Amino acid sequence: MIQADLVVHGIGQLVTCEAAQGEGPLGLLEQAAVAARNGQIVWVGPTGRWSRRVRLSEGGLLVDAGGRCVVPGFVDSHVHLLWAGSRADEAAARIRGQAFPDGGILRTVRETRAAGEDALVEIGRGRLRSFLKHGVTTLEAKSGYGLSVESEEALLRAAARLAEEGPQAVVSTFLGAHVVPDERVAAEYLDEVCEVMLPRFRGLATFCDAWSDPGAFDSDQCRRVLSRAAELGYLLKLHAAQLAPGDGVRLAVELGATSVDHIHYLREGDARLLALSQIVCVLCPGTAVNLRMAAEGSARTLAGAGARLAVASDFNPGTSASENMCLSIGLACLELGLTPEEALAGATIGGARALRLQRRCGSVRLGKRCDLALLEADSYLEIPYRLGVNLVSATICNGQLAYSA
Ligand code: NIG
Ligand code: FE
Image (cartoon, rainbow, N blue to C red):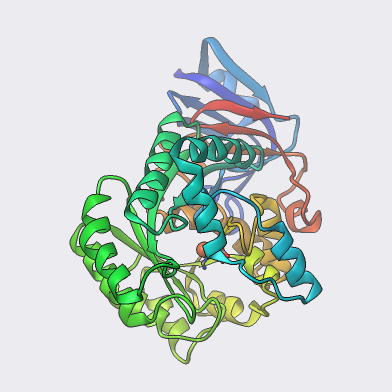
C-alpha cells in the first residue's frame, strides 16, 4: 500500500497535462483520483481503485471532487506582483481615448518607492491570496517598479519574504531594466544596474529580465544588462516586441534566454528561430486586449511553427491588472487564436517551463508537487466558454487544501 496524507477522489475529468498519461494532448483521465504525501504526488489512477492501493494516514485529508474537472494548479509565468497604488483612472482615460498626463510606469514607481518593503509585503500577501482563489499555485514576482538600488532591493526582499510564507511557490525576477527612472540618464542608470544592482541582488532573484521596446531600452542596452546577468549566474527573460517590431527575439535566442515575452510582432524568420530553440514564448493576452493589439497573427504563427508557448496574466498596474487565469486562458483562445488545449497547457506546463520548474510542477505526475485546481465544471472546455468566470472552487497547493470556496 502507498502511504498518503491527501487523496482527491471522484474526479470526473483529470487534466494531467502529460500526453503519455491519458487521452489527447492534455493526457485526460476520466473518473480518476490523485494521492499525495508530504506535498508530492505519489499515486494517480482510477477513482474506483484508490482505496485498494493507497492508505490515507490518520488525520489525512480526503477531498471529494464530486465528478468535476481537476486541472494542474496554474503556473503564472509573467507577473509584476509587487507595486503600490492603482492606475484605474489612467486605464479609464485610455478606454475613453483621452490623454492622461503624468501616468505610466513612473507614476507607479513613485508610489512604490513611497510604500516601502513592509507595505509591499502586505500588498503582496493580499494579491497572493487572490491568485490562490484563481487556482495559481506557482507564480513569478518581477521587481521593476523601484528602479533605484534601495527600492529594487525592497521589492526583491518583499518577494523573498512572501516566498518564505507560501503557500505558493514564488519565483523572483529582477527587472531593473524596465524603463529609465525619471531622475536618470539611460547610460548611467544601466551602469548602476550592471555594476551595483546585478552583483548585489544575486542571491535574491533567479531571473533577470529587461524590456526591449521603444520607450524602454534598445536591444544593445538589453544585451548589455542580460549578458552581465548571465555572467553572474542569473537565468534570462526578455520583454520584447510588445509595442513595436524589433530585434528582441533574436537577442533572446542569441543569449539563450529561458523565455521571451509578449512578442506581439514577429519579424521574418523569428518564429522558425524560436521553434528551433528551447525558448518559451510567453503570451500575455490580457495585455494585448488592454492595448487593443491584434496579436492573433503572431500567436498563431508561433503555435503553427511549433514554438513552445506559455500563457500568463502579465499582472501589472498599467496594462493588465487581472490575476484571473481562467480569463487569461479564455482570452488566449478568443483573442490570440490558441486552441483550448494549447491555452491550458500554456497556463500550466508551459508556464512551468518558462520558470524552469517543469520537473517540479505544471502537470499531474508522480513525484511532482501536488498542485491542483478543482473547477466548478465537468470539462476544461468550459474555461474559454465561460469567459471571464473564475471556475476555481478549490486550490490544492503543495498537497494542502489552501483555498476552498
Ligand atoms: O508588461 N512591458 C512592460 N511592462 C508592463 C507595463 C507596466 C505598466 O504600465 O506599469 C507590461 O505591459
Ligand atoms: Fe510584463
